[in-house]
Every structure is written in C-alpha cells, then in structure tokens.
Length: 378
Ligand code: CXF
Ligand code: ZN
Image (cartoon, rainbow, N blue to C red; front, top):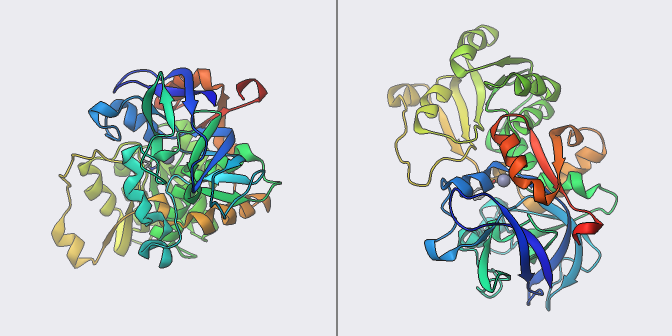
C-alpha cells in the first residue's frame, strides 16, 4: 500500500515527510494502523549520528519506535494477535522463546540483535521502500508513519478501552524510565533516589520511584520547567546540577547518599559516571539509562571508592522491563489512576510538523512531543 512517513536521507538532515510503499505482512508479521507516535530522543540520536543505526549504503531511514494502534492485517502463522486488536509496539521484540525471554529478560530478546539492521525479522528483507529504494525503519518499527508492518514479536496486545494515543508512550519512554527505578535500580520503600536528567525518560524514573515507595526523590535538570514538572511526578527536591544536589542530598540522607541514582540525560558522557556514582550511598546502585555514543569507551570512575563502598553500576535497556508483562501492567496502573500519562504530553504535532517537534525537544520545551494521526493521514 501507499502511505507516508518521516524519512531521513542521511545524517544531520531534516526529516522529510514523503510517500512510501509499505509491504503487506509476510509470515509472522502484522500491519498496524497507528493512532500516535512519541518523539523519543533516540531518533534524534540517529539523525545527528550518535547512534549509527544505518550503514552508509542503507539510507533512507524511517524514524519512530514509540507507537500504538489497531491491527489491520495479519500474515500467515500469526497467533498472538488478530485483526482489530489494539496493540502497543515494543521497541524491543520479545519472541518468548530465546534464553533471555525464557528467563524473564524479554528486554534482552535475541531478536534485539537485528534492531540495527533495518531488515525484517521474518525474512531479512525490507518491508518499506521510498522511491523504489529499500528503507530501514527505526527499531524495525518506523512509527513516524500512519501504518507499519512489523514482526508479531513487537506487537503487544492491550485492552480496547485504553486510549491508544496514551498507550503509545509505554512503548519506550515511560517503561524505560519507570523500569530504571523499579527494576534496574530496585527502589524500595523508604529509599532515596536521584534522577539525573528529567526529560521523557527521567520523569518516568521519578514516577517509578514514587510508585515504589521512595522517601526522597531528587530531580536534577538544568531546565527550570523540567524541575518543576518533576515535582508534579513525585520529586521531593530538585536541583540544576549534580554538584548542586550533593550537599542537600548528604544532609537529608544523614550522610549516606542515594540508594539509587538513575542517569537519564539525553546524551550520556564518560565524565557523568563518577559524578553520579559519588552521589550514591555505600552499597548503592547507579543505573545508566541515557544513551551514549557507540564509539565512546572512556569513563571516569574512582575505582578505590567504588570497591571500598561496594557500589553497583547497572546498565539498563527498556528499564530492565519485560514488554509482554510490563506494557499491559503499566497501562492498568494508568487506568486505575496510579500512573500519570496524560500529563507527559507537552504538545501534539501533525507528522508534517515533526522537525518542529524535535526542535521543541532540543530546546527543553517538551517533556514528550507526540505525533497524532487522524483520518486525513490514513
Ligand atoms: C534505544 C536504544 C538503542 C536502540 C534504539 C532505541 N532505546 C530507546 O529509545
Ligand atoms: Zn525511545
């Protein structure tokens, strides 16, 4: 079918909304008509070249990996969803059978190794073409388009009464942030948690910490609006920098420091690590959720203190969450009023306004920008 998508033709270019040819689902795939797609920082990382998801010969690239919608077609052999089902697209597929999935680590599903290839899991071919050229969709999804054809391992069925435009957010940002506190950080009642970087991920680390029963939640962000917003998500204190947070944190924790520090800055660098780990208590955990450069290997860390105070440094993808369990579970929390989703969307955009959406993200104006699709798009 012919539809449209936001396409990148090379690094550092603007998104171009143009006509694309979307293939029907082959065996194991489904087609989904999307209601909305979130504007996550990772697509911007691809655009500026921090995340080299596209090999030089593999442009164009179709962005977007945070979407929800209704299944419109299923390919042969699909058993987990059927036409008419409402689904959230998990940016990491979960096959349910590989060793990671089978041991409760669906965020590490073996299919994840294919995410950067741009080619379909089912048969290794591309399902989207632009001007006759095969295109690579972000995380094998490409949700900056009213329709996607994806592998069934990425389509998570949800209840029909959940608003799809809110459900889209749990496909990446919400679950990544929430899980960073709850799973990767293991926040317990009474803990003190520091969240460094309070954008679309960090705000959800704050609400994850709140829901896990943290006593103090310290939000760190240079943007005053994000610090204020973090208070509405459950932060008890907020500071513009880690340096500013150190003294008051030491005071409220009677000298111990934070049980959990989550680093959720837009672009993580090696020098952030020691500063964050220094905020953590003896035996504390520092969770690295923010995205760094693929080629950067230098990290600053005081190894003496790290060993002597038996600290932990924990990487986290999708917050350590299991898409097939956590996506429906978080949406249930939302429907029960315990998880805030509505408030996270600062502004909605037409697909054609996507460059404005990313400009707003980069200027610090948005917690989450959301592309909404309507009848005119389908
Ligand atoms: C990223 C992680 C690296 C691959 C692209 C998606 N996560 C969320 O935005
Ligand atoms: Zn994302």
